[in-house]
Length: 616
Image 1 (cartoon, one colour):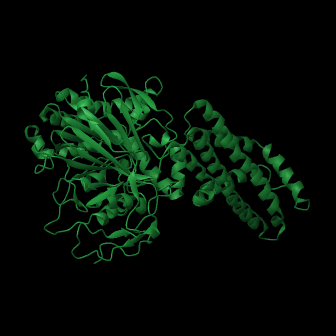
Image 2 (tube, helix red, strand yellow):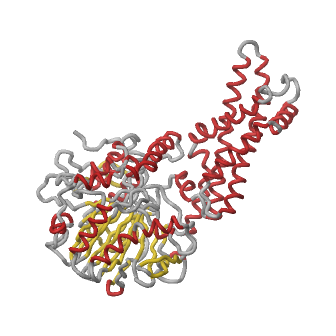
Image 3 (cartoon, rainbow, N blue to C red):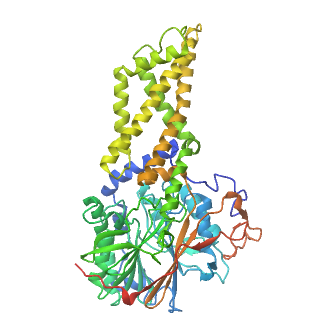
């Protein structure tokens, strides 16, 4: 039996990027988002899972739950390697490009040989668009199983994999995430990686008094009591002067700027990352936090706290569509960290230009990419046909109904009919209803940072659609009014032609929508999610490979500027379905490599320069 289907162009088995503006995806996502958002706080599955996990013994918690006193590599304590991947499980090509590198026995990046990591951390949003069993299997598990196949050979290794859920994992109430990755069984594998955690959060001893903590913030809710108790128990058993790497599902520090961000945005940071950090420093004497990691935003940025030396890295490049970087307009963020106001500054190797800054892709490249939204009508044709077209049809029919569906008997010239229809439609009370409803809808859903700009840009966007509806309805109805004079079926033909014409006008609306996204994103960095999800960009993929030594942490940010496309992959003829070897991936790049490079020079963190946090 073939473990992997041979036809890589079978889109059902090897999925393409999620079409976020597809009506089916929008409805499916809405169906998941609403219940998870409104009811998750009343049915927190973290509490249920913790209640069922009654075997937690604080006295032996390090040995039973955290890898033991010797860490995950007790045989060799000189160095431990860790891979960090977040926001994966979208299109096969981009997800597999990262999985392929993560699964190799070693990779060469800019002349540096990096060995396979001793453990893999997945930092949230393991699957898109929602947490369905089929999407988990095909969008997330299949690429990683093909990259690092599971084998029964005696010489095989099985590094641990640790996962924290993101908002997309929570869309089913975390049911599948817990069932797949948190059942605690020793035979639970993702390819050759072994998942053994029992909860949706974890604390792992890497060795040499280095720790890796991953917490579950649900859908921006508070840390639940069992989770807080778990981390308190672990911290009390850690040796003094521990070095802790914290993994969060959302980079809340980006929205926690003092004096500028909303209270809600600041609270998201203080009840998540800051809350967990305070547990570390309160319960473990002399503990330091040299690094905080997160995904959620699908780009790479690195900020450094000037006062404590802590690095805050966002690295959500595991496979999901690219997020822009040019909306991050500030090089410095003021936050409250370790009970004091601190400055987070964008990392920079040398102060000689943007190319050296710790941001990927660069803001210049990101801004230029926004113009891709001018092709919105082509890349999102189903949104134009099935959303904008019917919306325009409904508005047009309502306005026409006010005046008997058409002007005259069709004997006058087209220009006369058109202008008469235009004037008549614009003077109907229904037209004013359409204007108000569309303005309210588009204004409320606009993701524009400045409230003043939101009124101006949101109003112009809605007025453009209203103009398309008004002129389009007048044009189509004036063009097809002669059909009403056909005996018997004239009215039916008229309405059919009218609706078809309005649906086609939806492509004009698609151009308006794309132009709005392009201009809002390019000029001000607004609509960052909608503008870039509409384009489904699968380039600028990345992951982090960390080398942990006694008092030093080295971070290698590995980037892939151009992920291989579907035609760039081929099945590996040397792959043995009956007895696979874990160093023989099932699928290979035809060129032999995926053109990886360092996003920036390796970041070396000397823990002697990291200041311990002050406990509350």
